[in-house]
Image 1 (cartoon, rainbow, N blue to C red):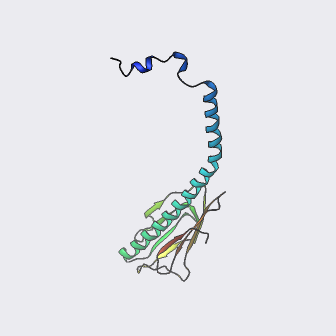
Image 2: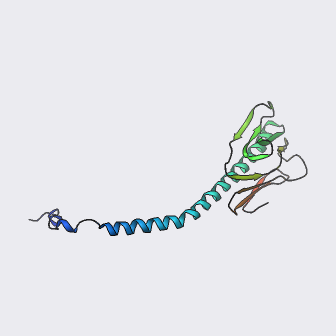
Image 3: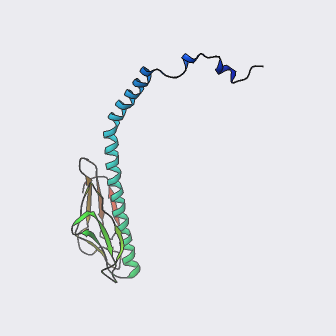
Length: 162
């Protein structure tokens, strides 16, 4: 009786594997395809980072609004470094200005413009008469995200420049 393994023993040693030419062709094709796909992948990463920052800004605005209503006090969200939202932002504790309710770290490689700060009143509405806007983009990318806050205090995100 012939075993299943016996089928492979009948081959001659010279017929196993790939030739050097075949391996070099495969490596060259993989290299060409990688070189063509790398710029598109870089744009995808920039786009996802822009979306991520816009989502984080929107979530922080919602948190600040909730804290203002919960504490029945004005709550402010402001950049960690004055007027530079890309360096991170914080929600200032209304009971102790030296403490923060929430702090977000910097987003390297992104550009974010916005107001000097956003203050939510105890009613959950924005303090002031103009709706704040945050324009988020990346250098070398045409992708933008705009986070706007209506006067009732709700943040909205759209896939365009402000």
